[in-house]
Image (tube, rainbow, N blue to C red; front, top):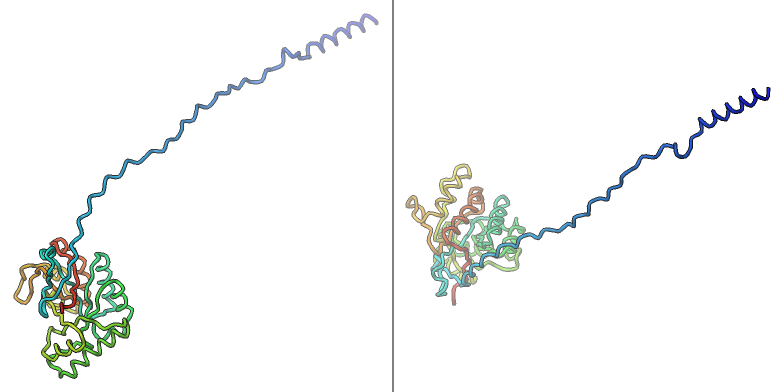
Length: 283
């Protein structure tokens, strides 16, 4: 029995030895290679190339005073340096118009030009337009209260037409107009006497745009208007030619005039014209 027990003990010890795991036999953890990241490349902000030099500014046009020759123009200057300039005076009659005067003003503003607006009695109903005209550097002129042919009126009636419009404008602006344009260009000695009494000056026109001619249902092709204003050779005897010093008559109450004005002004500038306002007559 002692031998059998000893054998069993020996067998148990052998089995325990076979099942034991020595440190040398334990599985090794996987080896992870650590690779250092590449060095960061410094970010260098690119410098934009230098801008090309600005072209030299054109010398400013000589400042000059322009005056009206007679009652119809053209305008002229006594400034020797400016005599050769091609200039035009832009004028607009019969407004203000709530539909189109703002469009005309927008075009003038975009091109840095000033004009004269000869208004009628409806100015009293549109004070905001009169104020905008003045605020943007334009002039307000007198075109009578109700656009009557002055030669058909008595002196007293003419006075009422002219002085009444002065009062309407003065109520909005605090000042009366200096420039007067006779409806239809029609005036007489009574008209001139009234203007002298009121300290005003007659200014008709030397170049009609024709925007009132051949109008159908209140409209005409703007391309015809553009052509007629820029033409130095009129297409018919009823038209006037463009000329240096032109006082150009438009109406800011007409849709086709508002539409044509940008190309008319661009065309005048391409022909070398600049836009001026006349000064009161020299004493």
